[in-house]
Image (cartoon, rainbow, N blue to C red; front, side):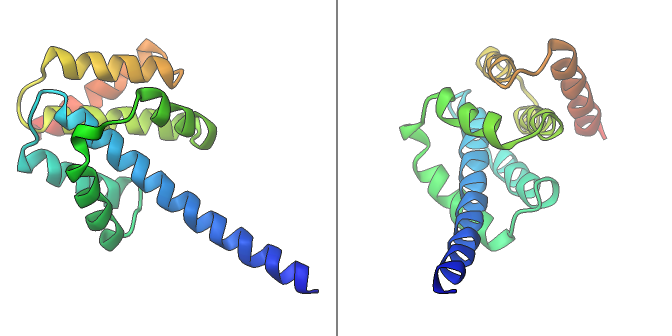
Length: 148
């Protein structure tokens, strides 16, 4: 009986840890995309925050804390493999495409797309096994949202 309770508690803690890990990785990847051009604008930070809260249903308080940490650590970026290996294991195709669309929205939010930014998203799409067609459609949807 005691072991059963321990397993239940450990299972709940691991789900919470996994959710926090999702948030940290999503936030880190979004900061990475926004900073690819060498600067992060307030518009991009707001877009990241709103995307995490509204699209990925993250807790606003947690988003603020994780976003602050990620922004402080933006110069200590991780390899793309660090992000994509976790995402490939834990996200379905729909969520991956939504992530690519969100990254395009963030990159487009400052009104410019630099070659480095589009290159990063193209590489991420490949590492996440997203087809060029799906990635292109995600970019078109992001452009449409950005123009409204």
